[in-house]
Length: 172
Image 1 (cartoon, rainbow, N blue to C red):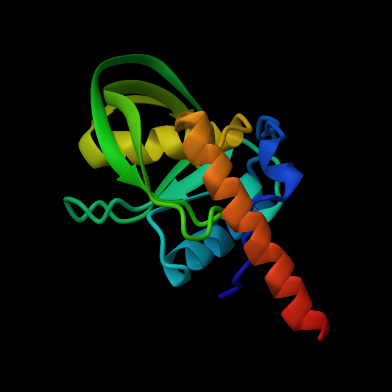
Image 2 (image 1 turned 180 degrees about the vertical axis):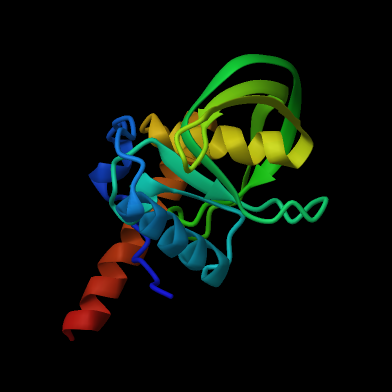
C-alpha cells in the first residue's frame, strides 16, 4: 500500500489539462492501486491522477452505492447528458471547500478499462456527479470554477491565508 501526496489548491498544476493514457501496463496498474489506497485513506469518493501529480486522463471513484466498489475510468468522456442536479461538493484538493454545484443528473459516458478495452455506459445520481467532478479535474477545472465569483474569491482568500499560516508554523 502506497499513499500518494494529494496536490492542494492553490498549486497551479491543478489547472493543467491531462494527457491521454497510452500505455496500459504494470505501471498504470500500480498507479491505480496507489490512487485507490490514497482515496480511501483520505477519505474520499473520487481521485483524479492530476490530484496526485500525474497529468494523465485517469480517475478512480467509489460512490459506496450498490456495493459497486472501486471504479476506474481511463480516457473518459461524456457523450451525452440530461437534467440538472444541485449537490454539495467537497474536494480532496480543496481543503475546507463545501459548496453547491450544478451538474447533469444523467450522463452517457465512454472510457477505457484497465486492460485498454473501450466501454460505454450511463450514470445517474451521485455516481454521475462524482464522474463529472473528476472529469473536470482532468480538464484543469476545479469545483471553485463552478461557483459564483464572490464565493470563489472568498474561498481563495481563506485558502491563501491557510497556506501562509501553515508555512509560518512549519518554518517557525
